Length: 185
Image (cartoon, rainbow, N blue to C red; front, side, top):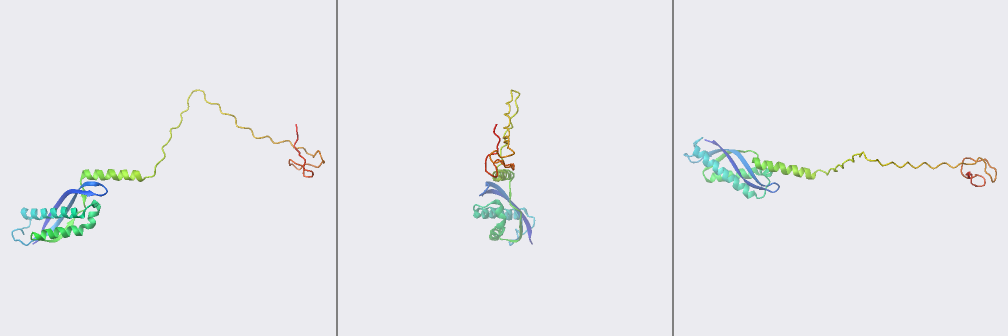
């Protein structure tokens, strides 16, 4: 006859990214006992023995993982369940089924994780230019703007070349002899 054994284990974990965290691994096992005295569904003693064995096996397995991220533990649930099963088997319990919830950090660790993620997000965002303060106009004597330079005046051209008498075509030099057609004052 199988009975349910819930377990919850909170322990310190060194996460390579977030450093020291406290995480919880919660789960439920469906267990049978070879010992008729311990095969009493709902018996406090039986459930507490199996639960404590599962807690110890959970912490021991995660410690064997070494430096692992808390999010990466879920990828190794198979190894975790196998160690729990073998630990309970040594004490006369057979595991018929197991379910483990996602690994969750405690509240203080979760606050640190969120803060560190925000800082990393801010550091990876491209830098925004710092706006420069706009100069405020003062009521003192305003500088007088210099007048814009005048466009150069077009030179006055003659209608006929003084040298050869050819009619000017609107250019600065005579098309016949090459003399200057600019009128001199």
